[in-house]
Image 1 (spheres, rainbow, N blue to C red):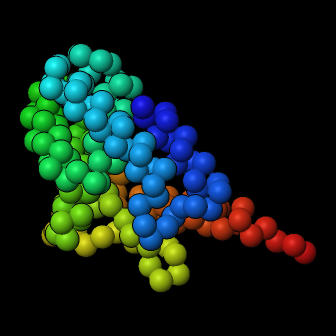
Image 2: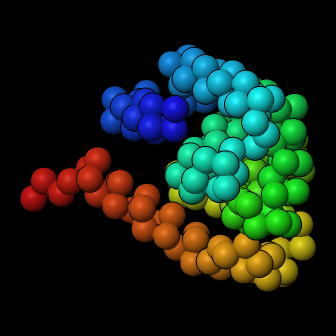
Length: 171
């Protein structure tokens, strides 16, 4: 399911159908199908944690929850499950951080870990507002994330590379 999610996402980027202002119907269809399947898995077995399904499948479950933007109630349920499982080391903290920040930013609230980014008027990544930004790197470190400054630099380098690839020098 995660492979299909990422494949369709990549295809839409390559075809310049993403990013877009609206939720792309092809991407939404993938997300809806994956969320429906994850709901069944969770109802039967609980959250797909490392002991239950292994590291890769656990990461896939997180990705599906992260992309359930059309079902915020489900995202919040997953957030509760991840919070519980982080405390017993059955999922990695960064997954909780990303999902919690996504839920907060979607609700118009300040994020905690600085994992969610918007773009400025020139198309460069900028973090959505952060609660107590002076403490964000301490919180990020707790969950194995690099500093906000390092992450922002990585994202800007990626955008710079993308721009060079999209608009090669014709001289």
